[in-house]
Image (tube, rainbow, N blue to C red):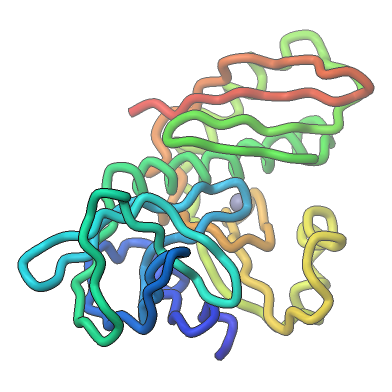
Length: 244
Ligand SMILES: [Zn+2]
């Protein structure tokens, strides 16, 4: 069981964010959900919600509406659907519209955090996303005049620059030599983690991250800065929308 597993399940989504269909075998089924030997369902985490999709087997389908993480990664079936028993071969499929929207949105948030750190020196303190809608919280004591428009303009430049977004894994010690990783992840990563997955918007932003991302910034689409909220004490919340 390496870093590419969740319990007994091989995480296909970590190696290939574009994978939408695959063959698998059911290992276990109980009230908490279905365990597969291989799965491309993103299980949720880092602000990115879990995937939706289906398992196809024996001429029927089981809709998957979420995930539960315990010792194993369990796929949560829709209440009305039939359940495969352990040993059943299934074909898994991810709902493409939702996943692709979440990949664009997640990459958009990394681009935003890179721009706001580079241009305003503000650190991220939290974030969350739904397909095409997201928020990110920053520690920014003063909001300069024209901040919202300046952020939107800088995001547009970085999208148009079509920077590559590269995913890799590094041994922990090596990862922690990257200044950006020290900035974003020092206190977040459990000490027992031996390898760190790195998402790099080349030339803009490098973060330790387990999410799924598009391959370059142009694939994000437009980033509209909807609102800058003052939550008090240097706590600013930026709301963004991803547009076609
Ligand atoms: Zn992320």
